[in-house]
Length: 196
Ligand code: HEC
Image 1: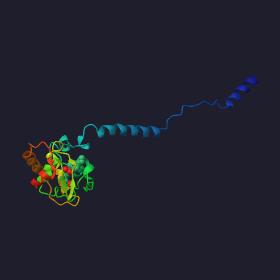
Image 2: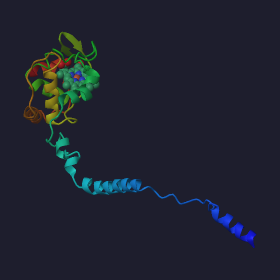
Image 3: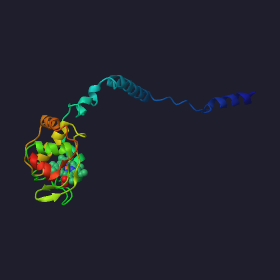
Image 4: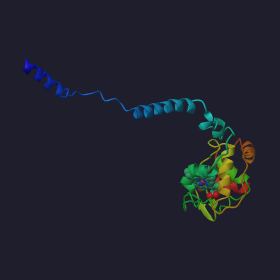
């Protein structure tokens, strides 16, 4: 009997068996995470990414289309894309093959002459700065708008040491109209000398 009591007392003195608690998430972490969530949801509503076109590229198709007359044609860019392959980026040409635009008497002549050259091209013998060429200069009349021809010629006439005046799209328009019956390239010096 006494033994039983002693045993019970001994059991009372013992610590309870340890067991694993569920560790609760600290309150601080809960607060920080819910604040971040609130901010994120709020951000999505406030940024409103689909509704403000002014935030994006606001150029219209008319701005981008030179042919429509909206934007300005970029003469330097056109020269690089359409002329530099033959006449070289320096405008110096390739001796005996592609004549120079730098200091050329054709480029720096009265504006109707280079306009006519670009509109219809050239074949046959052409003398440039005292040297004879007999290649073929492609026509750009079909490929380029009045504004583009004006821009590329203005670029050529004011670079490479040239100092002839710029050319207006309206000048190209009138030369285009005046020569609209022409379907073949100019026959080199023979025809172009007469247009000088
Ligand atoms: C495929 C090569 C080629 C391309 C591209 C070309 N040309 Fe020419 N160009 C020639 C050749 C070749 C001649 C000489 C024609 C001849 O010998 O009858 C010439 C002649 C000329 C002339 C008269 C001669 C001179 O040197 O001043 C001008 C002006 C001219 N080109 C401007 C241009 C412009 C501006 C462009 C671009 C829009 C251009 N060319 C694109 C080959 C080209």
